[in-house]
Image (cartoon, rainbow, N blue to C red):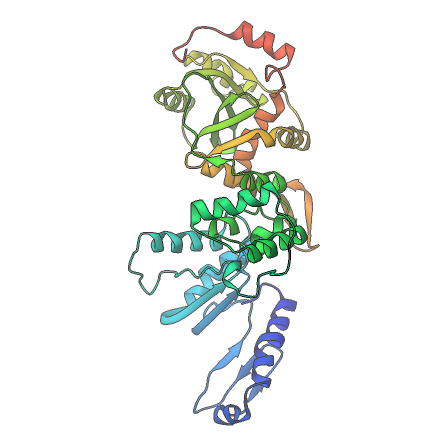
Length: 419
């Protein structure tokens, strides 16, 4: 499978045609010369029959063996094509035959990521695979005996040593000095791309944010500095919430505790099709001691059916300490978030959807021009990114709020069932 015409021809020439041309003459004679020899297909007559081809679709056909190359890239850049491959091409491979997929990881979303995680889960749970299940093959860089630098004697940095110590402690990966120095040199050359091109673990392979991601560098740092941990709730510190009121009632609530210079994002809730009363009930059930609740500016828009704003409805439901974030352009809001990103720590389990979404939040891809547009791609990830942007818009060094906002906050504060 290929996703573009030019790639189809290139794969056929470099993989299939090259292999056929270099087969041993004895084997070639046994098989016989193909009776179709085109730019993308070799076909043999009876008695052997059959063909080898590169195509952009196999829908409607019957394929004995299907190989899909760089599927992660296709899922990232061409989601419609990925959909066609899954619903068309893979379904054309009938029972008893085989599908293989190989790819460099490209972000924590899409079919390739889902297939890998499903296979990894089956492996960890030691499940017996059916003929319709994926089996995962992961090849970390250190299994290749060539990847060493035996004659190097430079010192490793404290950051390098911390990385290798984590591999040993968490994953039981014990590297030689020669392997460590080879890896360090590769990292100097590839920068953050080293985690995708030369991953040590499956988790690391998918930790690199997708191209065009607004927070690619920031999320790479989060993974490098191991700022995704189990973060227990501290009852001594108030929990602030930051909201996104999305289209079609898609809601996201981020729960955070500020401890010194760190912003500990300890919890996350999201849903759609529910009224505000549902979200208030969820918050109450969490039994947190709440501080302020920050909403985007559109909370002040009146509901045409009731004549009341959502903010008024929240007061009616008992939620006080409500702050309305000022309206700010998306790009300016993103810059505000980038400024405080080094402070973020994420709960590994409860906020998984959030940090995955931040890594996947990206610019729209223009397939015709082959460039990223200046506009954000609107998808499920954008709701979580909007909620974190609500935080970035109001954040201040001292009180996390501007003077005007603090006065407003004090004025609006009343006793509520959250206190």
